[in-house]
Amino acid sequence: MTTENRPFRSVLYIPGDKQRALEKAQTLDCDAIIFDLEDAVGIDSKAVARDTLAAMLASADCGRRATMVRVNGQGSDWYEADLAAICATGPEAILLPKVDHAADVVALAAVLDSHENCAHTRIWAMMESPLGILNAAEIAAAPRMAGMVVGSNDLLKDLGATQTPDRLALQTSLAMCLLAARANGLICIDGVYNAFKDAEGLRVECEQGQVLGFDGKSLIHPAQLEVCNAVFSPSPEAIDLARRQIAAFEEAEASGKGIAVLDGRIVENLHIVTARKVLAKAAVISGVAD
Ligand code: COA
Ligand code: MG
Image (cartoon, rainbow, N blue to C red; front, side, top):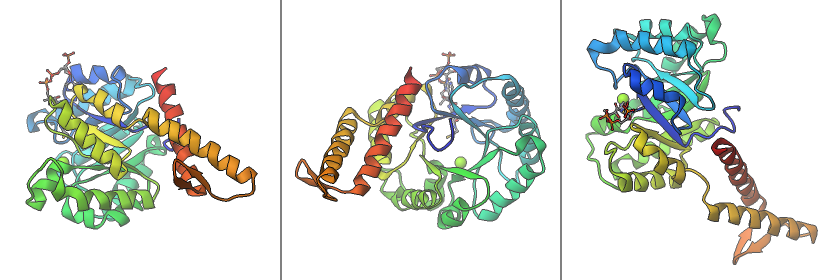
């Protein structure tokens, strides 16, 4: 599966030092995994996590799931050792935390260029600082970039903002990430929902992210997978509408018209582009479920 047609509905953080959680990587129903060496791992466990994860990556098969490793930040005590250990395993992707400028990505890309195992390795950026958000467009256009992940906890902290159920304080940042990602053909993943036992609150936040245009949401606990996968899959209603739009448009075209009318609304060529995307996504997801 290429990055282009892969689903990224559910993107689960798995702490690099939790052996039990790492073992689950091969069975959980998530579309992508972030193996974390950064914030999910305490300072005393950094070296153990790095070694445990590198050993696991060298042998594990995560099947259809996309994988990336979140290393510690550039300038931290662990960045270089993390990169050396993880690059040796030929990772699919590196998730770089606290990206402020495109130059941060360029520097990581240069390291990957020098590694024979990393010719294919893509870069994802954590979008979690005010400077990073303001520079989102240049970051998204940097070399090897495949996607962006919003770090909403760090953003709220740095903005001095208050968390509310409607995420009012984050709306500008979320939109700027999406604009930058879409302008450069990248995947864009929403931030985490901290209250991992609150399925209803999670659903509301997933729905908001889906409406805004995110491909999926980052998650912290397996209990969040089901709700998230459901919200970010095309609904039966959306699939039915897409099919009917395509049929109506083809019928209109056959009689020489460029616009169809369905359920009292116009259907133009651009709606057909979206309708075909919905059906293609549904087909990929139903393949995943088989
Ligand atoms: N990925 C994979 N498996 C996980 C998991 C995760 N993120 N979180 C929990 N599990 C597993 C546990 O290993 C446990 O498995 P088991 O029953 O087979 O032993 C099962 O799910 C139930 O875990 P539970 O007891 O409910 O959770 P916990 O109290 O041990 O941990 C958290 C709760 C939030 C601390 C833990 O989920 C976690 O560390 N999440 C990731 C946090 C993170 O990555 N933060 C950084 C990004 S914001
Ligand atoms: Mg962070």
